[in-house]
Image (tube, rainbow, N blue to C red; front, side):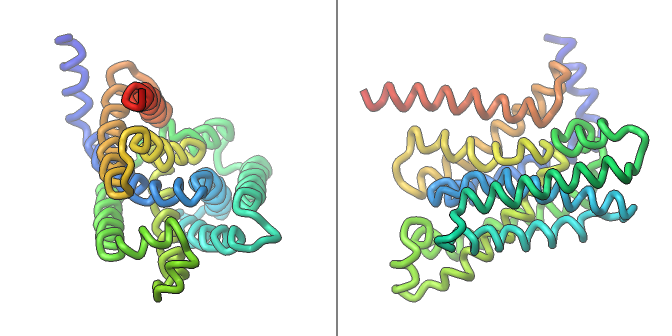
Length: 281
């Protein structure tokens, strides 16, 4: 136990670990707040779809040797998020089909670009890092922390100010529109925010594991809580605690951060699932 504490203390002395803890907390909080709405609207898979889009945009920026990839990846992901919501409202292209269509195309396009125009000799390592976040966490800087804090503050403000409208749009868009709610604005703002969250989360868990940050906390909270507010608050608590636990656990047992965080969230979901069944009985 003493050795574990010494190892943990040694890692916590590094700036990138502190940056990772702060960024993971902020990103998880944002993802959980919006995740409840996305899950209830049956758009839980949008996180996975947008993460693939972000991977494709990242591949383009890498091939073009862009120094800062954020100005390239973020606008592309945000535009695709808005398109996904618009396509999801079109009877000819259902939401799940639109997400699958865009995400698979972006993922394949990104891998083809990296394969044909490799930025480094280690293509497999670059792809693995982008998909699973295995080494990207080492590149976090103070600017990433500032961006995460600002993004978290904006998300919380948006959620608090427009809480009643978000609640209405989540359960019945037609009724919300009839009562004067600007449904397009709420959907567009939600899409842009979730796109930013996903782009930031790529450095922590990788593009293939991002949807876990959106889905697992909300689903876990729904096993115990019945009200929208209760689910949202419980989801936020689960997201933050599991993310911090995952990072600390990955340090102790020397495992990839992204996979460890997702594993902890999956385990917590199973525990809440059992507790929920016991309560119902």
